[in-house]
Length: 322
Ligand SMILES: [Zn+2]
Image 1 (cartoon, rainbow, N blue to C red):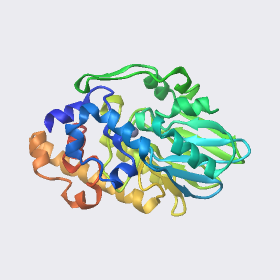
Image 2 (image 1 turned 135 degrees about the vertical axis):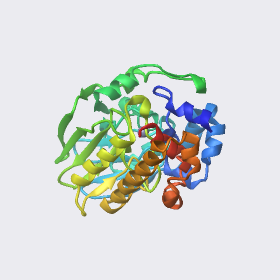
Image 3 (image 1 turned 90 degrees about the vertical axis):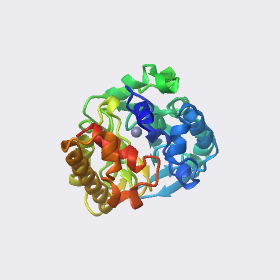
Image 4 (image 1 turned 120 degrees about the vertical axis):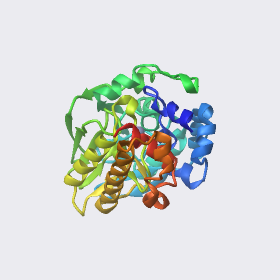
């Protein structure tokens, strides 16, 4: 297990959130232990699974929907200016994604916004660009997608995306669009899950996509290799709470895709308690393995521990940052 953990801590290593997606969990596709065992072949497995997973559409309001089933949750705004997608899902889902998008409306695809660089949010960039989408992202997302990401332990090279998949419009901290009659506000978080995370707010609709700063009802991955940290995750949760009300629809990066402030608060409080528990153990001089054995997440495991980030793995991620 300790060795497996190293895989995920390697610089810009492939992240476990990449094997996220509700369809995988719902199918009981891989337990965390199996995922570790299968690490080398995981990219193929993700793609194979995404290739056959159905896409489920949830209609929200103001012509905004969320599509579930291809990597991270994908939000879609339709209208006369064309479809605006928040995240791209996984490329091999193209047939199901295409059908789900056509079922929403006949508007052409014109814009794609990436919430961060991870594979399960950007792998579909190239096909969406070829279908007409201009790609917009925080500048670090473009940087990471433009470089080879060698992951030694996995014997895997994440190649740079083809030119068409690279965001053509980037920004440092904020960017504002007006499309289909709605304001779309893009804002960078301080480093949280990565150092490329942004939230996307549809102000008039009171809907926000908070990227992978929020995993609804499941332990999150934290990507230390590109600037993430447990404290950053908590700070982003506090920022999300401050920016929303009880009426706001909150779209998490992973987990049940139509969420709210109550679930967000529960996630935030879990992060704080686990952080404090793990910090206390580390302060007592416990090793990482001893900290895991002390089960500092026990009170939350029944609810949050059933997805790909299991209690032990989440404890190790937190230990790394306290
Ligand atoms: Zn991610």
